[in-house]
Image (cartoon, rainbow, N blue to C red; front, side, top):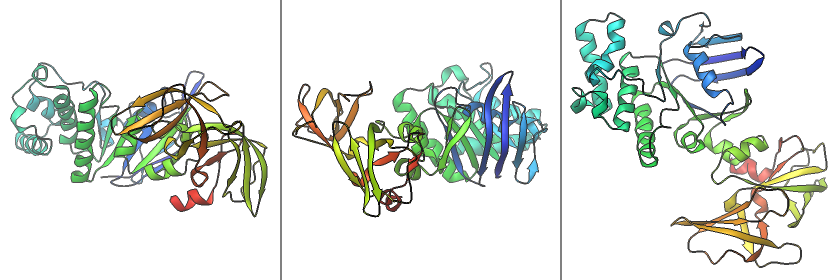
Length: 368
């Protein structure tokens, strides 16, 4: 096991600044997930840690050693790729043993490590098979086993589940989580799927445009997003956003006016002074209540999705083109074409300034 520290890491390809001044500490034995939209730099950052790409500027430390100039084989890392990258002409045993043979390990050591890894991953009955005779989930376990057999200090995963169907992804998420619990090794995992990030990580790193938006536990990012981007990216369905105007912010609290919804009294900390009267409020779908329409608070239901144990109700936002979403337990009394009023739970409203930075609410502080 090992710790990883990134100090002002930058990566430039030609004129494109892909990674921009990233500072990050990953503790010994932590499971850290890099998450963000396509093109945010998460896979590039993983490849910089692995040594598959060179660092333009900054220092990368594994434990206390700067490893910028060390080749991948000397960094003590193992990597699991999205495409499995198994040798089709080799058996499962030989695929898992290949890296050890290149390292000139003894036959006894190779056999001990392969068999031990196979037991952990429940591959003992598949060692004689070739990859074409395996399911997608079994191939991914072999790819993990090949990396693990080398006993790396750090295991890196680059979107390893994206090629699997939905039910198999759930199964493999559980297997990877159990694997981390058994081994206690340092793991860094890249995904664009925020559900994978929320279910696997000790710590999530949200990336956007090559820089870090926020680092924290799944609970911290969900309950106290630091920016509007994080609030919209973490959580499924996504957070609802509505424009708002600041009316007052003092020791008695914060009052905002949301067009179509009306005036809201929020438990806002008066020390967090917005720089502009133009704000956005954010409300999770489960914290948005529907009621009979009243006055200007009148929104049309445009779609109702029944998901078995819960219902998603989509509403015309009046302003903008992103539908508002209400989530509730099934059954639902709401139908397409109905008009309703929106009643946000003010204890769970998030407030963002005109730059997208979150303004702290006491209710959010207590929930976190």
